[in-house]
Amino acid sequence: MPDLSLTSRGAATHKRILEVATQEFAEHGIAGARIERIVAAARTNKAQLYAYFGSKEGLFDAIFLGSLERIVNVVPIDATDLADWAVRLYDEYLRRPDLIRLATWARLERHPAGHLVADPDRLDDGKLRAIAEAQATGLVREGDPFDLMAMVIAMSMAWSPVSNVYAATAEEPSELHERRRALLRESVRRAMAPDNR
Image (cartoon, rainbow, N blue to C red):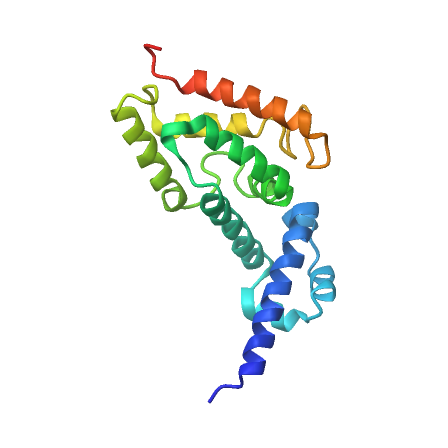
């Protein structure tokens, strides 16, 4: 019979490593992150970290793919209302700025061109199908579903932590966020409306 306390301790260590490493990678990127800082803050050791993740790159991959899956699950697409989806993405970036920073580091340090992930179908298939179905019913403009999805995501990131113009924070006055949400909602609605509207 397995030692359940060891199993729960192992799970707790694994969780601490992921939490600490998420902040480390979000702040410093892949090249700048330091395993020594991660294991010290997670109250573990390098051997344990490498046993779980294999390498620094393996740890980043686990965190990065987990962050993308989290956004897909926490902010599921509603292709019948892409404007609302964009606003919900905006809100998620305010709640978890570290997640968008991870994606930016992956773009800068790993995939400067093309798809951000090696297997984009895994995360995008459901979204692209939903957009194509909304197009088929006349709710969304014509065009490549991937390009439409990319445009909505880009619009939702206008004030994200990696904006080249202005990075919003959750601490700003709620009136500012409401104004941005209204502008974002209307802009996406107009951009994605069927051509005859």
